[in-house]
Amino acid sequence: MTEHLKADVAIVGGGIVGASAALELCGMGRSVVLLERDLCGSRSSGVNFGGVRRQGRALALLPLAQRSHQLWGTLRQRIGSDGEYLRSGHLKIARSEADMVSLEAYRERSRAFELGLQLLGRQALRERCPWLGEAAIGGSLCPEDGHANPRLVSPAIARAARDAGAEVRERTPVVEFAHDGHGFQLRCATGLAVSAVHLLNCAGAWSGGVAAAFGEPVPITSEHPAMLVTEPLPRFMDLSLGVEGGGIYGRQAPRGNCVIGGGRGLALDPLRARSTPEVLSQAMRQAAALLPALREAQVIRSWSGTEGYLPDHLPVIGPSATTPGLLHGFGFCGEGFQTGHAVGAVLAELVRDGRSTTPIGAFSIARFSPSRAASTAGSDFAHP
Image (cartoon, rainbow, N blue to C red; front, side, top):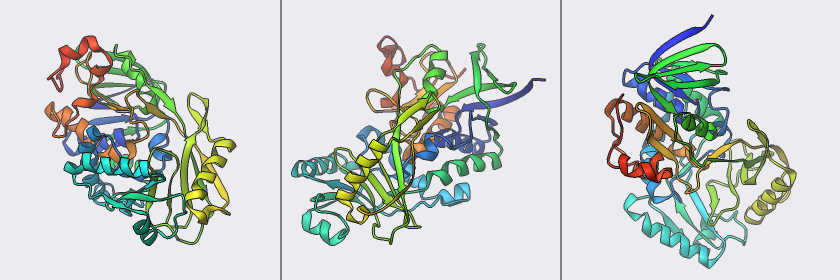
Protein backbone atom coordinates (compact mmCIF):
# COMPACT_ATOMS: atom_id res chain seq x y z
CA MET A 1 0.00 0.00 0.00
CA THR A 2 1.16 3.53 -0.77
CA GLU A 3 1.77 5.77 2.22
CA HIS A 4 0.79 9.42 1.82
CA LEU A 5 2.22 12.37 3.73
CA LYS A 6 1.17 16.01 3.47
CA ALA A 7 3.30 18.91 4.66
CA ASP A 8 3.89 22.59 4.22
CA VAL A 9 7.43 21.88 3.02
CA ALA A 10 9.15 18.87 1.47
CA ILE A 11 12.94 18.86 1.52
CA VAL A 12 15.00 16.62 -0.73
CA GLY A 13 18.44 16.02 0.77
CA GLY A 14 19.34 15.38 4.41
CA GLY A 15 22.76 17.00 4.46
CA ILE A 16 23.67 20.03 6.53
CA VAL A 17 21.66 22.44 4.34
CA GLY A 18 18.47 20.39 4.14
CA ALA A 19 18.56 19.39 7.81
CA SER A 20 19.26 22.98 8.92
CA ALA A 21 16.33 24.21 6.84
CA ALA A 22 14.09 21.55 8.39
CA LEU A 23 15.14 22.57 11.90
CA GLU A 24 14.52 26.26 11.20
CA LEU A 25 11.14 25.62 9.56
CA CYS A 26 9.94 23.53 12.48
CA GLY A 27 10.85 26.41 14.75
CA MET A 28 8.63 28.61 12.58
CA GLY A 29 5.69 26.25 13.04
CA ARG A 30 5.81 24.73 9.54
CA SER A 31 5.20 21.03 8.93
CA VAL A 32 8.19 19.41 7.21
CA VAL A 33 9.01 16.14 5.46
CA LEU A 34 12.75 15.61 5.00
CA LEU A 35 13.64 12.95 2.42
CA GLU A 36 17.15 11.51 2.27
CA ARG A 37 18.21 8.85 -0.22
CA ASP A 38 20.79 7.36 2.16
CA LEU A 39 21.41 8.39 5.78
CA CYS A 40 21.28 12.01 6.84
CA GLY A 41 24.74 13.54 6.70
CA SER A 42 26.27 10.50 5.03
CA ARG A 43 27.34 12.20 1.80
CA SER A 44 29.45 15.36 1.37
CA SER A 45 28.10 16.91 4.60
CA GLY A 46 29.55 14.03 6.60
CA VAL A 47 32.78 13.17 4.76
CA ASN A 48 34.33 16.59 4.24
CA PHE A 49 37.39 18.04 6.01
CA GLY A 50 35.34 19.73 8.72
CA GLY A 51 36.74 23.22 8.15
CA VAL A 52 34.62 25.97 9.69
CA ARG A 53 36.33 28.98 8.14
CA ARG A 54 35.33 32.31 6.67
CA GLN A 55 38.81 33.33 5.57
CA GLY A 56 39.36 32.98 1.84
CA ARG A 57 35.72 32.79 0.83
CA ALA A 58 34.43 34.79 -2.14
CA LEU A 59 33.22 38.19 -0.97
CA ALA A 60 29.68 37.38 -2.15
CA LEU A 61 29.64 34.46 0.30
CA LEU A 62 30.88 36.37 3.33
CA PRO A 63 27.45 37.63 4.50
CA LEU A 64 26.30 33.98 4.63
CA ALA A 65 29.55 32.93 6.25
CA GLN A 66 29.19 35.62 8.92
CA ARG A 67 25.61 34.60 9.67
CA SER A 68 26.67 30.96 9.88
CA HIS A 69 29.55 31.91 12.18
CA GLN A 70 27.01 33.17 14.69
CA LEU A 71 24.92 30.01 14.36
CA TRP A 72 27.96 27.78 14.85
CA GLY A 73 28.48 29.56 18.15
CA THR A 74 25.08 28.31 19.37
CA LEU A 75 25.49 24.74 18.10
CA ARG A 76 25.04 22.88 21.38
CA GLN A 77 21.95 24.92 22.32
CA ARG A 78 20.35 24.29 18.93
CA ILE A 79 21.13 20.62 18.29
CA GLY A 80 22.22 19.19 21.65
CA SER A 81 25.80 18.47 20.55
CA ASP A 82 28.91 20.59 20.06
CA GLY A 83 30.06 18.32 17.22
CA GLU A 84 33.66 18.82 18.42
CA TYR A 85 33.37 22.39 17.13
CA LEU A 86 36.38 24.46 18.12
CA ARG A 87 37.30 28.04 17.25
CA SER A 88 40.94 27.08 17.04
CA GLY A 89 41.89 29.72 14.50
CA HIS A 90 42.49 29.17 10.78
CA LEU A 91 45.89 29.84 9.25
CA LYS A 92 46.28 30.26 5.49
CA ILE A 93 49.93 29.56 4.73
CA ALA A 94 52.04 31.53 2.25
CA ARG A 95 54.85 29.72 0.45
CA SER A 96 56.08 32.71 -1.57
CA GLU A 97 56.14 36.49 -1.52
CA ALA A 98 53.43 36.45 -4.17
CA ASP A 99 51.26 34.47 -1.76
CA MET A 100 51.79 37.11 0.91
CA VAL A 101 50.75 39.85 -1.51
CA SER A 102 47.60 37.86 -2.30
CA LEU A 103 46.79 37.37 1.39
CA GLU A 104 47.24 41.07 2.08
CA ALA A 105 44.98 41.97 -0.87
CA TYR A 106 42.27 39.66 0.46
CA ARG A 107 42.50 41.24 3.90
CA GLU A 108 41.90 44.64 2.33
CA ARG A 109 39.00 43.47 0.17
CA SER A 110 37.29 41.75 3.10
CA ARG A 111 37.98 44.44 5.70
CA ALA A 112 34.31 45.55 5.85
CA PHE A 113 33.37 42.07 7.16
CA GLU A 114 35.63 42.41 10.21
CA LEU A 115 37.17 38.95 10.03
CA GLY A 116 40.04 40.06 12.22
CA LEU A 117 42.69 38.75 9.83
CA GLN A 118 46.28 38.98 11.10
CA LEU A 119 49.15 38.83 8.64
CA LEU A 120 52.21 37.00 9.96
CA GLY A 121 55.65 37.44 8.43
CA ARG A 122 58.37 34.81 8.57
CA GLN A 123 59.58 35.66 12.08
CA ALA A 124 56.10 36.07 13.57
CA LEU A 125 55.03 32.79 11.97
CA ARG A 126 58.01 30.94 13.46
CA GLU A 127 57.19 32.31 16.91
CA ARG A 128 53.48 31.45 16.62
CA CYS A 129 53.85 28.08 14.84
CA PRO A 130 57.26 26.53 15.52
CA TRP A 131 55.91 23.23 14.22
CA LEU A 132 55.73 24.52 10.62
CA GLY A 133 58.42 23.62 8.11
CA GLU A 134 60.66 26.00 6.17
CA ALA A 135 58.33 25.90 3.15
CA ALA A 136 55.99 28.23 5.06
CA ILE A 137 57.26 31.82 4.88
CA GLY A 138 54.20 33.62 6.27
CA GLY A 139 50.47 33.45 6.57
CA SER A 140 47.12 34.98 7.40
CA LEU A 141 45.47 34.02 10.68
CA CYS A 142 41.74 34.28 11.34
CA PRO A 143 41.57 33.68 15.10
CA GLU A 144 37.80 33.00 15.28
CA ASP A 145 37.67 30.39 12.52
CA GLY A 146 38.11 26.71 13.30
CA HIS A 147 36.86 23.20 12.64
CA ALA A 148 34.33 20.56 13.68
CA ASN A 149 33.66 16.87 13.15
CA PRO A 150 31.29 16.52 10.16
CA ARG A 151 30.48 12.92 11.04
CA LEU A 152 28.91 14.20 14.25
CA VAL A 153 27.47 17.57 13.22
CA SER A 154 25.41 16.77 10.14
CA PRO A 155 23.50 13.74 11.54
CA ALA A 156 22.93 15.63 14.81
CA ILE A 157 21.16 18.46 12.97
CA ALA A 158 18.81 15.96 11.33
CA ARG A 159 18.08 14.38 14.72
CA ALA A 160 17.34 17.82 16.17
CA ALA A 161 14.96 18.49 13.28
CA ARG A 162 13.18 15.20 13.97
CA ASP A 163 12.92 16.07 17.65
CA ALA A 164 11.47 19.47 16.67
CA GLY A 165 8.69 17.78 14.69
CA ALA A 166 10.04 17.11 11.20
CA GLU A 167 9.11 13.83 9.52
CA VAL A 168 12.55 12.52 8.58
CA ARG A 169 12.69 9.61 6.13
CA GLU A 170 16.05 8.04 5.38
CA ARG A 171 16.81 5.53 2.64
CA THR A 172 13.94 7.11 0.73
CA PRO A 173 15.04 8.20 -2.75
CA VAL A 174 12.62 10.39 -4.68
CA VAL A 175 11.99 9.01 -8.15
CA GLU A 176 9.33 11.40 -9.47
CA PHE A 177 8.67 15.13 -9.09
CA ALA A 178 5.63 17.07 -10.25
CA HIS A 179 3.91 20.40 -9.66
CA ASP A 180 0.15 20.40 -10.28
CA GLY A 181 -0.39 24.15 -10.18
CA HIS A 182 -1.19 24.12 -6.47
CA GLY A 183 1.70 22.24 -4.92
CA PHE A 184 4.28 19.50 -5.32
CA GLN A 185 3.70 15.77 -5.65
CA LEU A 186 6.66 13.50 -4.94
CA ARG A 187 6.85 9.76 -5.40
CA CYS A 188 9.55 7.75 -3.61
CA ALA A 189 11.09 4.38 -4.42
CA THR A 190 9.73 3.04 -1.12
CA GLY A 191 6.13 3.70 -2.18
CA LEU A 192 5.84 6.86 -0.12
CA ALA A 193 3.95 9.74 -1.75
CA VAL A 194 4.43 13.29 -0.45
CA SER A 195 2.33 16.37 -1.12
CA ALA A 196 3.71 19.77 -0.16
CA VAL A 197 3.18 23.45 -0.86
CA HIS A 198 6.92 24.17 -1.01
CA LEU A 199 9.83 22.04 -2.21
CA LEU A 200 13.45 22.63 -1.16
CA ASN A 201 16.09 21.19 -3.48
CA CYS A 202 19.04 20.43 -1.19
CA ALA A 203 20.24 17.24 -2.87
CA GLY A 204 23.91 18.21 -3.11
CA ALA A 205 25.78 17.02 -6.18
CA TRP A 206 22.57 15.41 -7.42
CA SER A 207 20.51 18.62 -7.23
CA GLY A 208 20.91 19.21 -10.95
CA GLY A 209 18.46 16.40 -11.65
CA VAL A 210 15.83 18.02 -9.43
CA ALA A 211 16.31 21.40 -11.10
CA ALA A 212 16.13 19.82 -14.55
CA ALA A 213 12.85 18.14 -13.63
CA PHE A 214 11.38 21.64 -13.34
CA GLY A 215 12.86 22.97 -16.56
CA GLU A 216 15.99 24.70 -15.30
CA PRO A 217 19.09 22.63 -15.98
CA VAL A 218 22.36 23.86 -14.51
CA PRO A 219 25.97 23.03 -15.48
CA ILE A 220 26.76 21.22 -12.23
CA THR A 221 29.61 18.73 -12.15
CA SER A 222 30.94 16.38 -9.48
CA GLU A 223 34.31 16.46 -7.75
CA HIS A 224 35.69 13.99 -5.23
CA PRO A 225 37.99 15.38 -2.52
CA ALA A 226 40.73 13.03 -1.33
CA MET A 227 40.94 12.79 2.46
CA LEU A 228 43.12 10.85 4.88
CA VAL A 229 43.73 10.54 8.59
CA THR A 230 46.97 9.57 10.32
CA GLU A 231 47.66 7.51 13.40
CA PRO A 232 47.40 9.46 16.68
CA LEU A 233 50.43 11.72 17.18
CA PRO A 234 51.57 13.83 20.13
CA ARG A 235 49.69 17.13 20.04
CA PHE A 236 51.63 19.76 18.11
CA MET A 237 49.20 21.64 15.85
CA ASP A 238 46.65 23.98 17.40
CA LEU A 239 45.27 25.60 14.23
CA SER A 240 43.26 24.56 11.20
CA LEU A 241 45.45 25.02 8.11
CA GLY A 242 45.01 25.94 4.48
CA VAL A 243 47.44 26.99 1.77
CA GLU A 244 47.16 30.13 -0.34
CA GLY A 245 46.66 29.15 -3.97
CA GLY A 246 45.44 25.67 -3.09
CA GLY A 247 47.08 22.43 -2.11
CA ILE A 248 46.69 20.56 1.14
CA TYR A 249 44.69 21.48 4.21
CA GLY A 250 44.90 19.96 7.65
CA ARG A 251 44.00 19.92 11.31
CA GLN A 252 44.75 17.75 14.33
CA ALA A 253 41.84 16.08 16.08
CA PRO A 254 41.59 16.00 19.89
CA ARG A 255 42.80 12.37 19.89
CA GLY A 256 46.00 13.36 18.07
CA ASN A 257 45.09 12.07 14.60
CA CYS A 258 45.87 14.52 11.79
CA VAL A 259 43.17 14.97 9.16
CA ILE A 260 44.66 15.94 5.80
CA GLY A 261 42.93 16.76 2.53
CA GLY A 262 44.33 17.45 -0.90
CA GLY A 263 43.83 16.44 -4.49
CA ARG A 264 40.93 14.61 -6.08
CA GLY A 265 39.66 11.08 -5.65
CA LEU A 266 38.08 8.75 -8.17
CA ALA A 267 34.38 8.13 -8.84
CA LEU A 268 33.53 4.43 -8.68
CA ASP A 269 29.96 5.02 -9.84
CA PRO A 270 27.39 7.85 -9.53
CA LEU A 271 27.08 7.24 -5.79
CA ARG A 272 30.55 6.16 -4.64
CA ALA A 273 34.09 7.55 -4.75
CA ARG A 274 37.45 6.74 -3.20
CA SER A 275 40.91 8.25 -2.87
CA THR A 276 43.76 6.78 -4.91
CA PRO A 277 47.22 5.80 -3.59
CA GLU A 278 48.91 8.24 -5.96
CA VAL A 279 46.85 11.21 -4.76
CA LEU A 280 47.26 10.24 -1.12
CA SER A 281 51.03 9.93 -1.48
CA GLN A 282 51.23 13.36 -3.09
CA ALA A 283 49.08 14.88 -0.34
CA MET A 284 51.29 13.38 2.37
CA ARG A 285 54.45 14.67 0.68
CA GLN A 286 53.01 18.17 0.52
CA ALA A 287 51.79 17.94 4.10
CA ALA A 288 55.16 16.73 5.39
CA ALA A 289 56.89 19.67 3.69
CA LEU A 290 54.76 22.02 5.78
CA LEU A 291 54.43 19.82 8.87
CA PRO A 292 57.68 17.92 9.63
CA ALA A 293 55.92 15.98 12.41
CA LEU A 294 54.14 14.02 9.65
CA ARG A 295 57.28 12.71 7.94
CA GLU A 296 57.10 9.32 9.64
CA ALA A 297 53.35 9.27 10.32
CA GLN A 298 51.27 6.30 9.20
CA VAL A 299 48.03 6.79 7.30
CA ILE A 300 45.33 4.63 8.87
CA ARG A 301 42.29 5.57 6.79
CA SER A 302 41.36 7.39 3.60
CA TRP A 303 38.09 8.27 1.93
CA SER A 304 36.41 10.49 -0.60
CA GLY A 305 32.93 11.78 -1.34
CA THR A 306 30.97 13.60 -4.01
CA GLU A 307 30.55 17.38 -4.08
CA GLY A 308 28.69 19.57 -6.57
CA TYR A 309 30.58 22.28 -8.46
CA LEU A 310 29.31 25.12 -10.65
CA PRO A 311 31.44 26.98 -13.23
CA ASP A 312 31.65 30.25 -11.27
CA HIS A 313 32.35 28.45 -7.97
CA LEU A 314 29.30 30.02 -6.35
CA PRO A 315 26.25 28.07 -5.14
CA VAL A 316 22.65 28.27 -6.25
CA ILE A 317 20.51 29.60 -3.39
CA GLY A 318 17.02 30.96 -3.76
CA PRO A 319 13.79 30.62 -5.74
CA SER A 320 13.26 28.68 -8.91
CA ALA A 321 12.93 30.74 -12.08
CA THR A 322 10.25 28.39 -13.43
CA THR A 323 8.18 26.95 -10.61
CA PRO A 324 6.50 28.82 -7.74
CA GLY A 325 7.26 27.34 -4.33
CA LEU A 326 10.48 25.64 -5.44
CA LEU A 327 13.66 26.77 -3.65
CA HIS A 328 17.22 25.68 -4.35
CA GLY A 329 20.22 25.33 -2.06
CA PHE A 330 23.07 23.44 -3.74
CA GLY A 331 26.40 23.65 -5.59
CA PHE A 332 28.66 24.72 -2.74
CA CYS A 333 31.88 23.68 -4.49
CA GLY A 334 33.35 22.06 -1.41
CA GLU A 335 32.55 25.03 0.85
CA GLY A 336 29.10 24.17 2.17
CA PHE A 337 29.94 22.83 5.63
CA GLN A 338 30.61 26.20 7.23
CA THR A 339 27.79 28.06 5.47
CA GLY A 340 25.18 25.29 5.73
CA HIS A 341 23.50 26.57 8.89
CA ALA A 342 22.93 30.00 7.35
CA VAL A 343 21.73 28.60 4.04
CA GLY A 344 19.12 26.56 5.88
CA ALA A 345 18.01 29.67 7.76
CA VAL A 346 17.79 31.65 4.50
CA LEU A 347 15.67 28.97 2.82
CA ALA A 348 13.33 28.92 5.82
CA GLU A 349 12.99 32.71 5.66
CA LEU A 350 12.14 32.50 1.97
CA VAL A 351 9.35 30.03 2.73
CA ARG A 352 7.94 32.15 5.54
CA ASP A 353 8.55 35.69 4.33
CA GLY A 354 9.32 35.52 0.63
CA ARG A 355 12.64 37.25 1.25
CA SER A 356 15.83 36.81 3.22
CA THR A 357 17.64 39.12 5.60
CA THR A 358 20.93 37.92 4.06
CA PRO A 359 21.79 39.01 0.49
CA ILE A 360 21.61 36.11 -1.95
CA GLY A 361 21.23 37.85 -5.31
CA ALA A 362 24.58 36.55 -6.56
CA PHE A 363 23.37 32.96 -6.17
CA SER A 364 20.24 33.05 -8.33
CA ILE A 365 19.71 30.05 -10.61
CA ALA A 366 18.63 32.54 -13.28
CA ARG A 367 22.29 33.38 -13.90
CA PHE A 368 22.55 30.15 -15.86
CA SER A 369 19.68 31.16 -18.17
CA PRO A 370 20.30 34.65 -19.61
CA SER A 371 16.90 34.67 -21.31
CA ARG A 372 15.21 34.45 -17.91
CA ALA A 373 17.57 36.66 -15.93
CA ALA A 374 15.84 39.89 -16.94
CA SER A 375 12.35 38.63 -16.17
CA THR A 376 13.33 37.43 -12.66
CA ALA A 377 15.44 40.45 -11.67
CA GLY A 378 14.15 42.14 -8.53
CA SER A 379 11.89 39.31 -7.45
CA ASP A 380 13.14 37.20 -4.55
CA PHE A 381 10.32 34.66 -4.41
CA ALA A 382 6.94 33.88 -5.93
CA HIS A 383 4.37 32.28 -3.65
CA PRO A 384 2.20 29.57 -5.18
